[in-house]
Image (cartoon, rainbow, N blue to C red; front, side):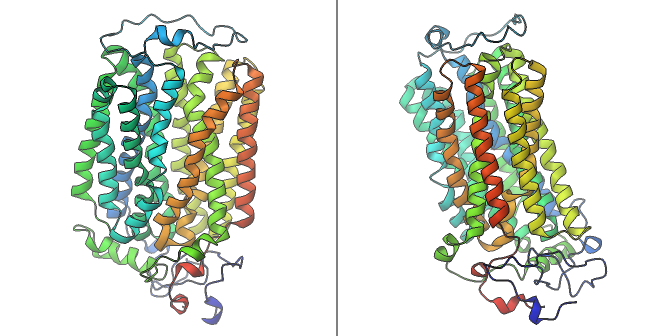
Length: 514
């Protein structure tokens, strides 16, 4: 057992020995596990003494937020499918850039479809503005959302953020009738609503997630985004075919409103204010976190922005999102115009990689916490290794996908493996904000997600400019650039990340004594 003197939190510049304490033999009254090895609060933080998972308030929060992010990403990506049906095919015919390097993969499938939806004369450039306008609103509310959530709680902010997006989605057909400008403005407003959601959720988890359960709880929570993509892409296509494109927005908008009602009724900002949480679970959560949270009333902006571990997360987040947004936006284009899958196959195959990512997020969250709790691996080691796997692995398979030519099966397999491995990052840099500054996790995520939104704004534009003829060689360049950025981000994070609470994030260093 370390002496109290040696248990002081390491300074910002120290590597620190953030290994998990030996929980097996630790009495409940003395030990717990935090990212900092020296922080050993009196809590039942060991795996054997943790509050039960079944019907617990913290896992109810995880599953409700899972469905919240499911709705959120459904609302985000449904336009990319519906837009195909909204645009007059005669307008887009002149913008056809299908490459004939690869043979037609299969004969078109004749499907009896409803064609009552109104058509608009929007060329490719106009469609690009419509799809990109979301990010111009999304980037604005990241940091303000994190700040507000850290001050007044994330429940209402997250709830109304998704509700606002859902309501605006219901008005999408009306905005389209008003014209291009109205639709761009509406999508930007949707981005404003969605921009607060991830920082608000991080702020809530800073009060709800015991350190040894962070990877599990957050991976469950944010995995909803991937499953929302998996479901909404093909489902939006089905709705467009058998009804018309307006029902895509009505359906997902109504689902968002139903979720909001459940969220407001069943969720609380903190364990202290939850109405049905058991006393033992409340004590388990609060005692495991009590020495990690700061009592400072003001945000330490200068030390925060000078913190190298924060910038390690920024670089990793930016790098990961470059590949993520490039594929999210352009994978259907690559499937259709290069590999030449028909539209039915395209909708399904474009969703498969995100199904793999969803499964990987869930499983990696379980693995990360088990490595820390059962095998005594340090928080920093786990975050580094999972980030390396989740960034370098996708880079390798992304490059491989570009160099196998017209081998359809391998191309789809490599792209699926690439996106699936990215799920490891959900237990890597994605939740490192809570390790280094739990009290300001929402603000930190707002900062990193602000930078990480930039690839969504410029990545697809650069990719489009590099593929004027849609040849395999041009797409190899796109994939290699994305892979190189991913590898750089992984290396930077590995070199400069930390796994312990930073000194600027706590108000009383003596509170971290045993």
